[in-house]
Image (cartoon, rainbow, N blue to C red; front, side, top):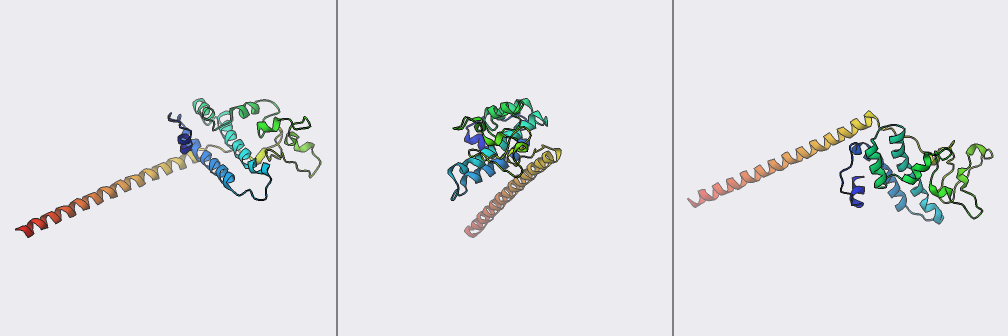
Length: 206
């Protein structure tokens, strides 16, 4: 996700806690990128965007729940994520309203040619037994208040996650230090070899 800041030409230092959310965001971004690059052969044109809608939902939902439900990130970090569009502010605004707590995408609210919103807004409990519906634009199979779209499961920023992150950072620092020591050692060896060669040349001259 640091690469995201570079791509968006964002030079401002992220707020405290940024390192806690980047592993999850990087994973979601990687899945989205794979979905965009995969072959769409044999798929309808609309299906090519289903995964994009899915991971856009996941990314926004992760930031939303991390702030409002888990209280795991600061208001400053939450606002930063909205500002640089890691999370969709308009979609999150809908989640705060009764009846729209789990809406998959703002696209689902757009009226079709019959003047109705997406079929995925119909509660699954109200559908005939065994009937599965899927929105043609978003690929969502149900995002009413009682449903969970796109197989979303809450991702908790736990102490274990923070500890693993710190351990990776410590390992990276140890690797960098080991590399510096090796480079210093190689430089010393080169200096010694140069001195020995110079001494030998002086000896031969005598």
